[in-house]
Image 1: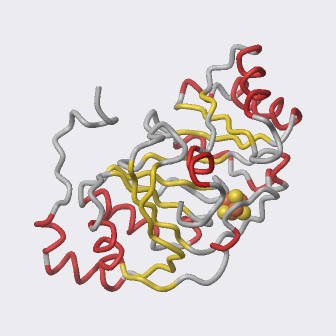
Image 2: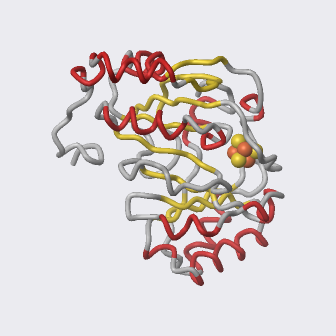
Length: 241
Ligand code: SF4
């Protein structure tokens, strides 16, 4: 048993495409604001534990109570897509996660996702679900964070996004307390989300002990995956990890 998708022929990196003058001309015109690009183990989702390159885009229109990436709200540096691809290719992995902030707050994020897929990477996108995901390249695995009441941002949920989910996507709930758990359970069951894609229940760090959430999931026989943030267990809550 290998990594997810390991049986597919690996065409990474797709050098012919990356060297195409027309493609590169387009990639140098399209710029995004980037907070950091780093290499780590995937701490969440179904590729947890796999070495992954993270591209963290700058900016977010939300202000969740438990946000652990406030440093990505502002700052960063402008990079064209070619530069981002050059940075990503330095690492010997085919897994790339585009995250934020809220990556989709930058219009060019869609172009970046497409370019990464064209280059042969296994690409995932971490999004708050407050912005339209319908334009995201279908080769991308979307990890849609449906905001719970405890986040303070649940009124920003764009429920129409759920219609665009496919089996390669994932819906995540960050759960702060029992009220959040009951809310997430109702969304999961009433909307039959597990029939669309995988569902992730994550305890909010420092607010809800993981064993408590684990016991609730088992008690209620919920068809969801408990996820803890592996990177925080390994390295603590530090940027670039
Ligand atoms: S959507 Fe993500 S980055 Fe934005 S405030 Fe919420 S947790 Fe932070």
